[in-house]
Amino acid sequence: MRRTFFLIGALLIAHVALLMVTPSGATKADTSEGLDVGIVFDVGGRGDKSFNDGAYLGGLRAAKELGARVRFIEPGEGSDREAGLRLLAAEHVDIVIGVGFIFTDDVNTLAKEYPDVRFAGVDYAVSTDSLGNALPLPPNLVALKFREEQGSFLVGALAALVGKSKKVGFIGGMDIALIHKFEAGYRAGVKYVCPDCEVLVAYAGVTPEAFRNPGKGKEMALSQFSQGANIIFHASGSTGLGVFEAARSAGKLGIGVDADQYNEAPGFVLTSMVKGIDESVFQAVKAVKEGRFQGGIQQFGLAEKGVGYIYDAHNKALIPDAVRARLNQLTADIISGKIKVPSTR
Image (cartoon, rainbow, N blue to C red; front, side, top):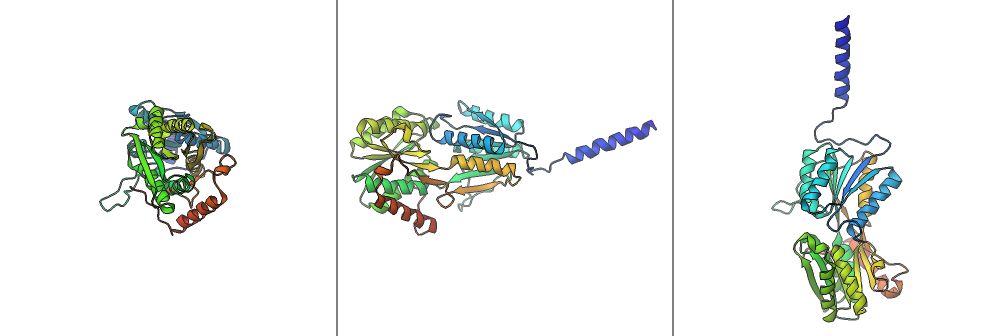
């Protein structure tokens, strides 16, 4: 009889163990009342009034609307980013989100190490083969990418139409392909409506620190204003806060990026080219919550309302109705494919 009890007990243990097995590489739907989310911020961290703050808002929304338990990690230097991601993965939270292209290699590596954990990379830099085709991602990793060039095209056209000068400025943070997308789209928009206009371009540096140097941003902006530009578009993280300082002191206009940056210099911000970072983060969490998470590349452009520009009571007086109508037509032409916006210089 004693042997029989032992046998029954062993069979029950084996049965429970089999129920808990997850096939390698598979992702499981969340079945708890809530879900655990980990978000690791990019260079500049919370309070950049731009990229990271957008991800933070997406996390807050997930907590409020989806009942998610969201943990935010603000790393210091490079090694801290990988450590933050690894900590969350080791705790097997339901989804780990790295905010910024700098996380690309780390997120990719950890997605392979932890196949039962879902990962999302905001602005993930997708690798391509010799023919330019995107290489496949791990099945538990989603790349959240934006068509920044499309939104930048619109603010470029706006700058040329209302700038009252044949010169406009662009200031980038780190001199990399991602920021080149902003520059390329902006330049294309300027040239589309004003072929003989000149675009002045400057970058803050070649390391991630270029995204958090307001002093450098102000210096470069003042230089472009002195050369005749009346409007400068920045894509430089907190470095852009210096651009707004320069606009205020020079009596000129700046164009914000990623989020509505009107409050950084009320009266001196023409508009902001916004990216739906908050929406992309929220949707990634929601997909996990609803059991429909799928790895791969997700693109957010004008058609998906993933990019755009701010037009509201704060800047309406700076944008004439005729210019607004022109921008609406340009938007429609981009969505329809009539206008092909370049994404490289």
